Amino acid sequence: MPGTKELKGTLSAALREGILSHAVLIEGEKGTGRRELALWLAKAILCSEENRPCGNCSVCRKIENGNHPDVEIFGGNGGARSFHIESIREIKNSLWLAPNESEQKVYILLDIENMTQEAQNALLKSLEEPPAHARFILTCDNRKSLLDTIISRSTVYTLEPPTREECAFALREKFPELSESEAELFSIAYGGNFGAASAGFSEGMGEIVLLASKVPELLKKGDSYSLAAELSSKCKTRAELSEFLERLLNITGRCGIDRAAGKKAPVRVSPIEAVKTSEIIERGKLSVLQNCSIELIESWLCMELSRIFGGNL
Ligand SMILES: [Zn+2]
Image 1 (cartoon, rainbow, N blue to C red):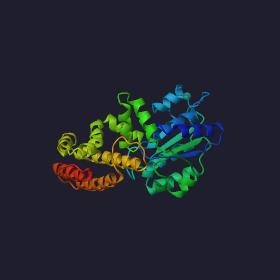
Image 2 (cartoon, helix red, strand yellow):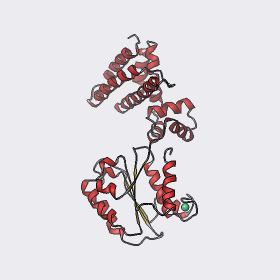
Image 3 (cartoon, rainbow, N blue to C red):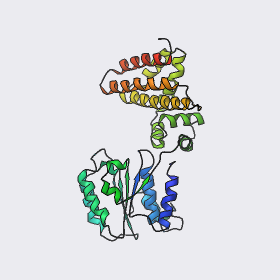
Image 4 (tube, rainbow, N blue to C red):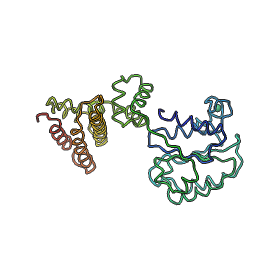
């Protein structure tokens, strides 16, 4: 995962010096590699090889496979308020018991922004005076959604999203079938979010991303007919149409900004075209939510976008 490299260096150093806090909070938006980094840190804490984590010893492998008895993972698979106090009670019940195989125990709590207020308060007590053998690794999307007291009892490390170039590079490593320009386009279409971009590619969103990138060019040629035809064949569901709108928003927004800054952009969009497109997309997204017919939204969209990019209707 791009972007995690720097933090791994910082965390390794803290661990080596013996100054790693007993509660580490990893903050970063979805898709930046929070879970991967949390598991990596658990391995680094428990692995006994010289270069920690080695990734090969039985400790590292057990953690990777989710069956190390001293590493427990909670959360990470639900929406808001899905992380309940029961999980914290479970932690409290085992917290003071000695570790099974290792010298320490690691509790990984994922997406703690989803904790109920009750759960956050209960967690606080465990964070305040944990036994010496216990370590907590917490992840969240944004520390602002947490109690101040949780933040003050942890050391926060923020995972910065990778740059567009880093994201494109990592995409090509993962999907060698992507050309350099396609990887760049994907990276722009998903706002440099590697997790989201690679999920999009794996889930077959490639054609929708390509279509979104062709919109300005097609319409500048006056070819709204091709756009309408491709839209109706590639975006048959609400989810596909939403995906198209999100990718178009990112592509035109980013390329418009680049153009304004005098930088080279893969899609030719002027700043004013980008602003107008974003207005249309916001209206389009509302229509998708409001259950309007997909065909109607698509033909309206083609008409509005044609106006922006100067094509003939
Ligand atoms: Zn190891």
